[in-house]
Amino acid sequence: MNTIMKGLPNLETEHFHLRKINTDDIPAIFDYGSNPNVSKQVSWETHQTVADTRVFVDMIVEGYEQGTKALWGMELKSTGKLVGTIDFVTIQERHGNAEIGYVLSEECWGKGYMTEAARRIITYGFEELQLERIQARCFIENEGSARVMEKVGMLFEGTMRSAMFAKGKFHDLKMFAIVSEDYLKCRNNKRQSCE
Image (cartoon, rainbow, N blue to C red; front, side, top):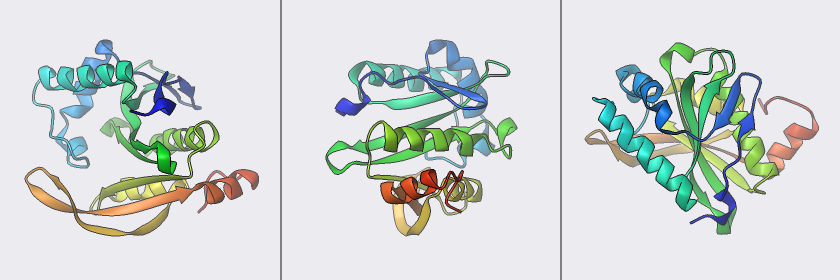
């Protein structure tokens, strides 16, 4: 699918090892994937059983092998526990753009962890993959995710009406994006974000 995603690298942040997930991570992913407070913020259904989580992990591992998945597990350096994932949900190589998505265990909310991981993925996208645009979308009710997008320098571009069918209904989505020109301005000013 995307030649730029063959050989997904491990990445580091202050608090995280960002790495490929594997079957050893199933219990940790089930831990947050089975939490309704977490799953209500994303498009997928709450994991009811460990088998649900295994299906997800198997799909991602197969995607790594085929070069179609660019998902990093967020392993806390302090504990070695996987507490979330962040990924390029889509990459349009020809157009130089990508969309990021993420999920984080409820116990880690409000600590700046997702902002930290998203900054690293955005840096990788612009500096290593030479992307032109990185975007992210969230349910309009998901204020936490919208704040992450703003903190990493993305600009709100508007509301996409009835843009996603999930959990039995259509949802409006907020669209945020950052382009390489804005990213470079922030980096050259040594700012952590473009707020």
